[in-house]
Length: 384
Image 1 (cartoon, rainbow, N blue to C red):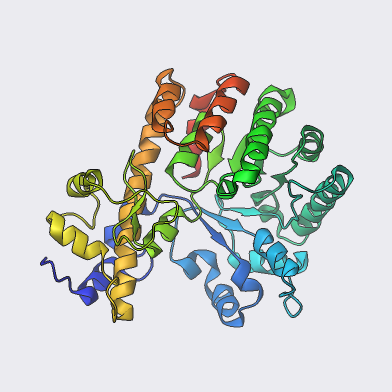
Image 2: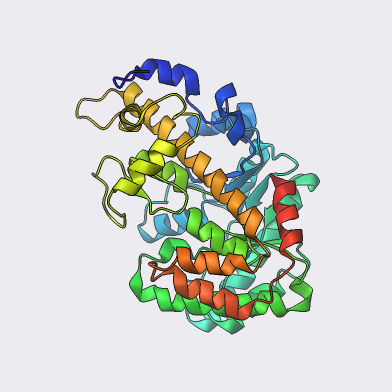
């Protein structure tokens, strides 16, 4: 394939949706998360969902994690942009019924999370209202789907988080509210670390929670994934690989994410010789048979002014497949190292330059007792 890539040929090879074509089969076992937020308001998308179910709607046959869109709904309410849209539990139940959840699919309840500045009494009220809403939502779903909808643990104080745990004592699998998506806010970082520390202490030392499975939300990307595995918490990659692909970002095992176009520099390391070396050594489906200059041309498709829609789509598709490949490699590292004494040392070195992630790792190491990660990894394998 020459450096002047034929975009139409790329689309014909890789398809317009990940997971559909034979060349993408290696990625089909990954559980991906999708938000249903747009389905509350888009009649066209909802009609498509009604006709095909969610697996047909997104073209992915492996297990899915459906996000109820609660965070986006909260933002819409704050902005006053939700007057004409039904964001009720009943509306979500209709979406989940139309989704036709598979036996290994999971979905989130619709809750309003207390934020770090929410007064204690108000946080407790929200926690109990969210619990009541979960029971209403489950009652509106077919019996076989009710336990697929997960409660979410919330709380920014030890007392509030413990109260949230009390509402989930009969649940085998519990979701944990977002953390890492807020790390860009330096003012919140200390509160996030403190919350992580008492959360680790509570869930790993409460006997009722010893056999529970925990699933972290908002933990996209390789480094948060490793932190979750080390801490005995499951994770579904929800957006990192797609967001990176959309902004010309490429991920490589053990290297900071960088933008090959050089245009998206916020919170990113610059593209260096190490990235060239890693790209040259890459063995993903898209890189196979191409030299370094051809690989760069492929991943830069859609970058030039006047690029066609087909070129932009093909470039994003290729970058997405590349990023998923490296996400799977990261998972294999975690499966190999989980439960071994070397995992902490590996992550300590990996996070050496991350002022945000280092405190989380230290908090996990201090609070946890090395839970049965063999069992945890088997659970992860079972649901893939």
